[in-house]
Image (cartoon, rainbow, N blue to C red):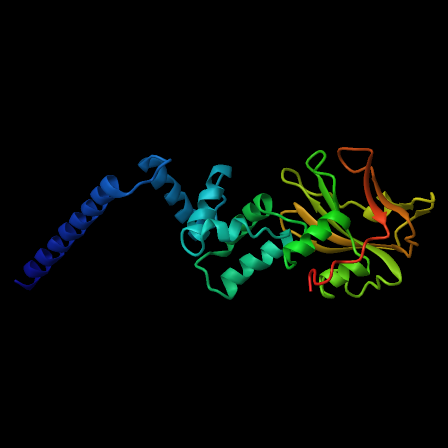
Length: 279
């Protein structure tokens, strides 16, 4: 008698669960909009996400990365504008993703965060410090930041950091401790989207020239950040102190992929910052 009742109970439970599952499937088919994907594509993609999340198997392809980012970030925590308008350097994006996971307790596994980080670094990167005001950013781009727009998928950005730069950043940044009053110091950003960055010996490939024809070799090249996928590298390059009377300073990078020489020029002296910019 007892076994009969128990069997009937479990049979009813199975039928009830099957009924709920059928209702869920019907609700999904009738009311859930999965466009631009078909419902079968949507189910397949989410099955891949679940398998990736809990097994760590590398089963995601390039088409899956944007939906993973959207499902983890822009559909749960933030609007798209909040993230995509706040462009950051590669290192800053890594700090943002780590903070979301470890401090804000976002429901994202470590393997998922690595994929999301690469997507953000590839699509929403900036090599201009994002702590600055719009006015200070405008000054930085006009007078201190130079870029070659990515020859051969190697993007090189260089920021000249005289005392004016420290006035903008209120004494923060990578060049703290490098004595910019005694040396000529530059921030260098190397980025690639397709290949991996080789271990370039920047100190052997770089020289600094002035408008008088003098040429200076680096005293030191220091890597300050490198992403795990080897797509992003930041560093500080230090030259002897160069006089900056009227004329120009020019960094020459030789024998990097894409061009025999890459030139980055700054007219000097750099104008004083407008009162209140970046402060």
